[in-house]
Image (cartoon, rainbow, N blue to C red; front, side, top):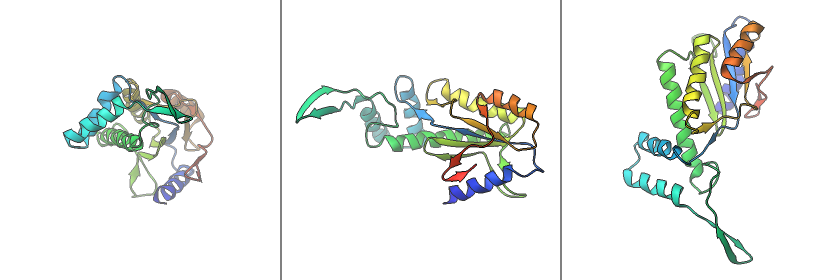
Length: 208
């Protein structure tokens, strides 16, 4: 309910004529895999949240050594090696996905704190927001300046370069304050590498 109310308020604030320097981008279907070098990222994430070392080793063993078998008419078939990432597979995969997304949120907060990524406020004197996460559906908010947009792009270039996170660029969209120059909108959308849109569809049931 809180996230839905925030989304509605943020969407409304983007339609205000007096503010011409805002960008709202939606990264859709963010995937996280656990093969190859991504195992190191997962271990680092578990360590980042101060989980006991014994528990970390147990989790990593479950992730790397799980080999389920399919029963067909009561008889086991060949062993299957899961390779679809943390979105599917063992029962605690959703929890690991949430932890990795939370680490991404910490990374964004660090860039915001350093001043490179300028968040947006939803009212005069109110709190500023840089992102909203709901499962694999991300809403990112920033001032529509070259520095902020480049910082948004840099954060995801950094995490995607090792294939830890994979963004579906074809379904991701960028939405700008309505009186920002069209030429500027197109330039910033190209910087992000996603399409400019008139709206971002629905997020938690709210049209944005």
